[in-house]
Image 1 (cartoon, rainbow, N blue to C red):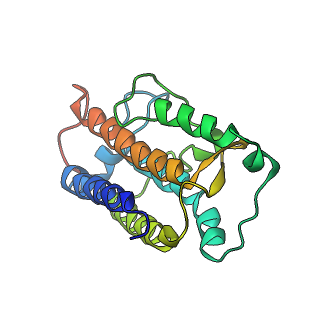
Image 2: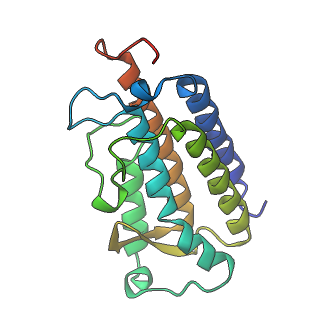
Length: 189
């Protein structure tokens, strides 16, 4: 690999997929969609959020793979991508330090997910890993990209890959915490 750090990230993503399958794979549709209240996310919404948010990065990965990615003004601003990347990496950690609100573009699209959401999530992560392998030929520290959530937020591809992996681990933990709630339905449909 040209970017050896990717192997570690890929292992972490594979672990997230395996944990999702082991933890949520046998849950009923009711359990996957259960939430404490309308302001909280269900297990299914956590997984759907990861599918939705990761997928917004894929068009830029495609452009990079085909050499079609052009720098924006914000991406060209000296020091700006490094600052944004640093700030996001301090904020989006596997263990949340603070509660964050998801940008509108990343909000789960479905309030009720189908019983296949775990399988969809695992398939999505396989696609995510495929993209990571495809962009390996690129210099990740020098390649700058724009956040799909806000066009003035830019960071290196290296930072983006870490942010996305941290984000996966963060929401897997959030989904597991839903199951730990006393009110969580333990029965199957």
